[in-house]
Image (cartoon, rainbow, N blue to C red; front, side, top):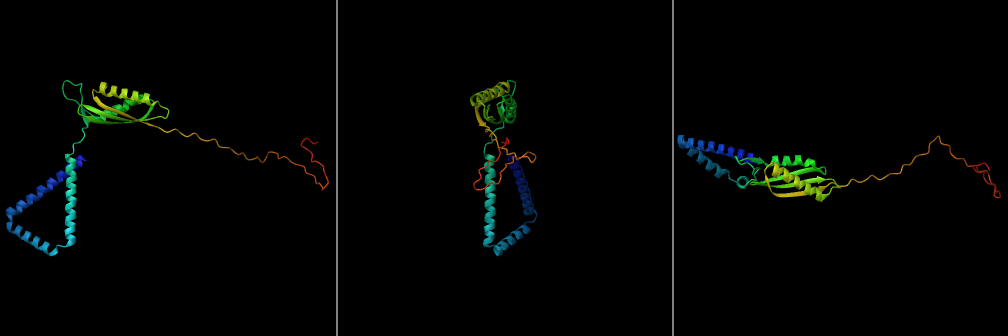
Amino acid sequence: MSLFNRALIIILLLVSIVFWLAVAAVVLLSPDELVSVLKYSVLFLEANITLYTQLMVALLAVIVVLASALILVIELTPSTPSAVQLTQVASGVAMLTTDAIGQRIKHDMQALPEVHEVVPKVAARGRSVDITLELRTGPDSNVTKTSEEAGRLVRDSVEKNMGVKIRRLLVNIHHEPYLASPQPTARVVPPSASSPQPEIYMPDQGPGDTTRAPDEKGE
């Protein structure tokens, strides 16, 4: 956004310079022509001014005013510094960017096997920093132990190894959900065409016939 603001300001300044140079040249070299142009412009406006023209001019003015006010607010709002001064350098002034601190934290957090993903957020506060760690851990990890180890590792990495003082350290842990175990499904095996089917012998029986069918043993 800062680059866009600078480019817009440069363009506006160039347009303003060209416009006022043209006005100065016309006033100095051709004042009579300038007066004629102004008179023609006034007559043209008097003849063609309508409600639609008034609304369009008012809308354009509102857009320009709002855009200018927005750019002015953005330029006057103090931006968050992206670098912090090192405290262990006595021979001069050394600055370290917050991005470099975040990359170092991500690299050092790989030593914790319980942490699957880490997103560090580092904000410079003069000669100290505020650090927020977003940790994603497994569902079976120990929250207290993981928090203590992550905090100790970050303080050793930032304060001892990099020489940057930590003003505030916040650790947010997000558990990964448990994976649902698949339910066993019953498998129906169709009978094979080659397997022998049992045959049942049923003789013709009359109303009074009590003869039993022979069993499988041939009785």
